[in-house]
Image (cartoon, rainbow, N blue to C red; front, side, top):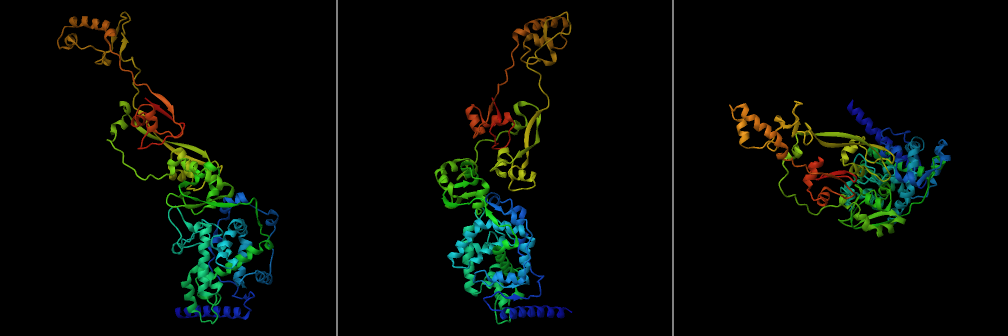
Length: 571
């Protein structure tokens, strides 16, 4: 039974490949041929670009601000087109790449024009910015311009796209391939996301593949699965004509649909109007220029000084993974709107100095010297009995223009992880969105409140006949009761009451004259923290220490952060 299945499977593959080869060779090579590949291949794996979330794509800053769709066209249904008409249209595209038609190509065309119409509309909007970059890279390598549609099926024109296998960027370059061409990939920079750098590398790679096979269908297939799989399929194929359709049965499942999908993408990007797909219109032109940055600068610093939205900087510079340009390591390129380049050059010093403490890297760091503060000082501030209690407070913040999760977390003194965790682990907040902020505060609560000063010194006798003030026995202290011979006589065991009564009255009358006042507690004042203030700066200005401020205000941690407008108590 197993042998029968194996034989039938291999025989079916050979017959399918032979049939495809005969049908392809029967038609003239320059004209697209109709290949009847048994209707459709159920083993084909559609590219991951078909799984793109179109609603998420519409949140792209560039699409929202620079493009618009023709509503009159998008409201019309898809126009039915015959196979013969599609063959005629494919033959009318001026290119050196063969674009044959078959049932598999038709299935991909229907997927674009019927099921994923909104995806095509979004890609048309992104093409207004990216297609000129692709064309320049292909022109430098003298390659067919139709190769600019490869990013359509690779990444759906998303520079931040990452496949399940780790391919990244518009051209979905793998890490070994990128480093083989000298691209930089690290924690801060990933040049696979850079439209200009990745397009240049992809064009060089396509040139190398074409020089190997001298056939664009094989070169395009090798771009998807690698030359090793193509060479293996060529060795297994028994047909004399070695092209993509001849080795089709021996290719990986995903690569079988790659060339048909490329043909379909080329057709749709040229004839989308005939299928009533809304053409993307430029709402306003985006003209860009680049400047070399030789300092460490964050997108937020540029945004605050030049009033450029951080989202726009990300769209123009997707290669910077943490919104940070490490110009202190080596010069990097920064793409800006053309009218902002000169402003950046003139304001570079102000940009780098703005909130520099948040983004600068310290070259050296020495550990703090001195003995640590005793634990008793934190557990028992100012000699009071009690305990520290941590309380949570929930705040709500409405996201403003240019704000990020990091800037909001810094504003409220909470960690970035806690802010994301409280809001469903979102990474990029939308303008106008309300975020939940959970803050914690550590407060010391004493167990008992001491009575006011003076109440423990003198009380009136309960006998109304005697109006003299006497010292309250349970509240006597060394400061309120004089120590001398009279005190020792009154406390001696067996002493006569008559002898102790006279001294007691004498002490009662003299107590107000000889009592010592309790030293007054140090007075405190409240200062308001300003922008750029720290505990060290406030302590130095008011003649106190950081530890004293921390104890007085219930602050914990090695370097507690204070916010502008916060009230600080100072002795």
